[in-house]
Length: 170
Image 1: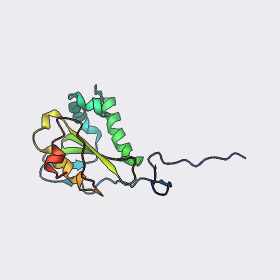
Image 2: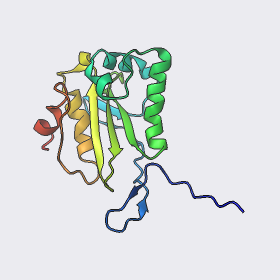
Image 3: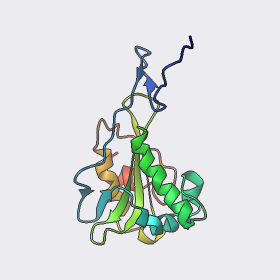
Image 4: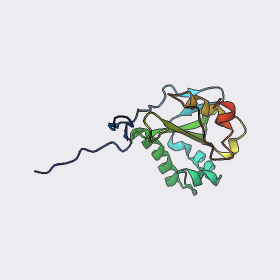
């Protein structure tokens, strides 16, 4: 008789007090989309490939994220499918940041489960052509207000770092 070990969800984490494996809290796609007069946070679409191409023009984005440095149609679609898989596999939630008037994707905001139970990390970027229009500020504000936000940020990029601490009260 062969004995098999039950498969564990790769996103599950041990609870620091009990040591039990705790599945991550599901982060569903917002319905309706989160929006204000500047941005709309929505599910990625395969037609958002121009946003991925724009992101690749900032060398810091492919260097610090999974955005490919050379964006072919296949590579762009693979990136978008990876964003969908984050929610499907319980890793977190990735949303396109779109212009509220045109619905054109111009950035990304992502909430990813951290190793500590109940904690998510927030990441974001906007394409260079849409910076200095408040897109990142408006995209990050709802993300900071979701769940038990800790209000602490760690900036990793010069072009994005001002949005969270200065304008969102973190």
